[in-house]
Amino acid sequence: MQDRELYRQILGIASPWRVERVELRRADGEVHVFIEHDEQVRWPCPEVQHRVRAPRSSIERRWRHLDTCQYRTILHARPPRSDCPEHGPRVVRLPWAEASSRFTALFEALAISWLKEASQQGVAELPGLSWDEIHGILERAVRRGLARRGTEPTALLGVDEKSFRKRHRYLTIVNGLKRSRVLFVAEGRRKASLDGFWETLSEEQLSGVEAVAMDMWDPYVASTHEHLLESDKKIV
Image 1 (cartoon, one colour):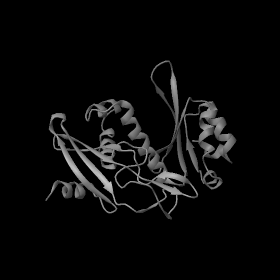
Image 2 (cartoon, rainbow, N blue to C red):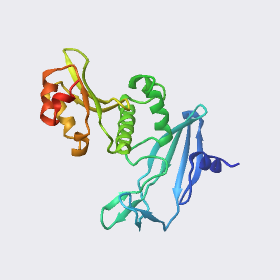
Image 3 (cartoon, one colour):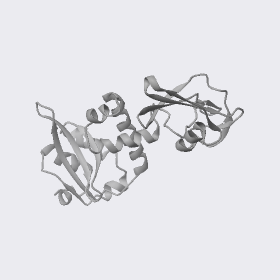
Image 4 (tube, one colour):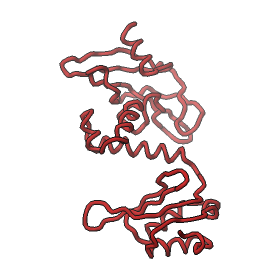
């Protein structure tokens, strides 16, 4: 099997994309994979489904991929822009990475699995990345998770404060107790900190709240009274 076909299959590259060439840069400890696309392709606008023609992009971009054995692997491509009459020029969706990322989806998935076990600084040191790069991967994962979550019932809630760093700095954290997940985080432990959570809920979600467990911190109690009907019966 030729190296181009090997990496095409490894990366899951399909038409109109193709692996044009693969370069082993042994002195740098890197493998560089160059991806091209067919000409005269009608690309879908990333905002809508209809397809439009797009000129070939002249700007090459790079993405860090999973290592090939001991070699760091870098993808190269020139993503075209779809000239959509409604949304204007937009970089087309790529099968291997998000538009705002400099890492492939598979690389980010590996980093996210590491983040479940170690700090951001610790994870950054493993592949030789900066703290900011790892934090960007984390932020994109959170955005994807929130987008998939959608609207869900909020029958049983937990509200608590969490101190961090020094000098009594706090976060307000709201948890969904049935599914054991964090629903909201805000700085401080003021009434306004919790107000921000209630404002994210629909009328249906607010009416569906059955109980709110908290430690009776006055600002939290005041916020709950203001936003929930029959809150005296719901505060635990």
